[in-house]
Length: 320
Image 1: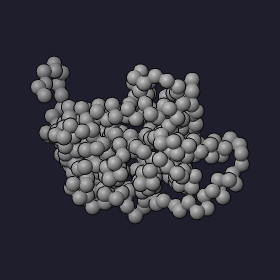
Image 2 (image 1 turned 90 degrees about the vertical axis):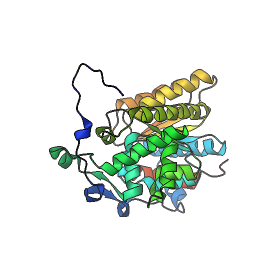
Image 3 (image 1 turned 180 degrees about the horizontal axis):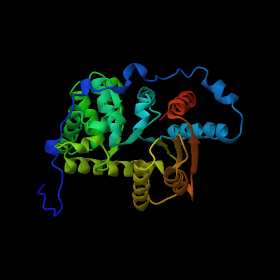
Image 4 (image 1 turned 180 degrees about the vertical axis):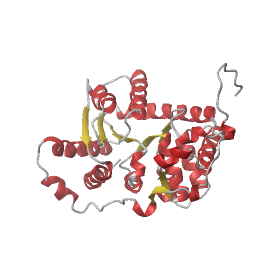
């Protein structure tokens, strides 16, 4: 792109990158969680009191079970923190069980997924790296991300599908821990929704904003199509995304309702560590104001999502 700006810009070719292998990371594969057998889950959930959030959680699990029995989607929106607290194996298990029918993540989710799949570690010390300008400067990470965008452009596919194909074709050592590789193997949609300037890969000169944005825009249209079905009694969960995915979800749902008219019966839930305006408004309240049901659950992801998954594995049966 020719730069005709009258304002000065930084030259990213002057950036000094670092080696990912030598970078300290806070997340390693031996710290990840794993799926718990559902043997005693029914007894546990049946033992819960019939009030407040305990009743809501059982009801929400029941809504997912009903949707999947009717062949309707259970689509999960996820922030990258879900990967960083070791939940990828649990989410992958739900995909392989055909309980989760699709995923949508921000581009930080792809970054952590790529690092985990290729290097077996992710999540650096931001404060330490910010002091000397090394934060986010892993060249391998930037190259992997750029390769995914280039593959998406070459094949005319979305960023999420390209990520899965790239990981599988390049035989990443830990593809079994990759959300995107697993989604591709399960033939499930996985979409990526980027914001330019929000991620470490934007710091490098070989980042291709045009290819990335075009592939992410295709993913937006894929999500919009998924929501045309979810709005007829399907279920959506937003886990740990405070801004990007609630905003993308609201616009994609608007497109879905503009194209496909009819009764609105979408079921939504927000899972986060604190109660925040945008997820509550854009995911829980607005989409269900004139049909459907919205739920809000507050708790740490590393506790709430394994608990949710345990219940889903026990109650979601007879999937179409």
